[in-house]
Length: 110
Image (tube, rainbow, N blue to C red; front, side, top):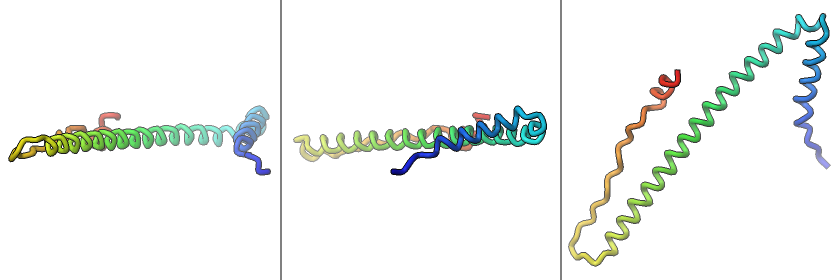
């Protein structure tokens, strides 16, 4: 029966860090390492948040495009099914994309 040990690693690292930080002789050597690990953890968290936000935005764009395409297709189907003879079907044009680019959004975030 396989056991999940993934929760034990952070626990053991926490215990080892706690012991090292409470022992006076080890504290001066371990503290810079702990500061570095925390700093890198904060940087990683910020990067993950950025990637998730970007992915969510791209997904929202895809959903909006799919909805717009579905609307255009359904309008074209209704127009084709209507009994008007000789009438030309005019499909609506998609609205231009006026959102700022990814680089412009990054600059605005700073």
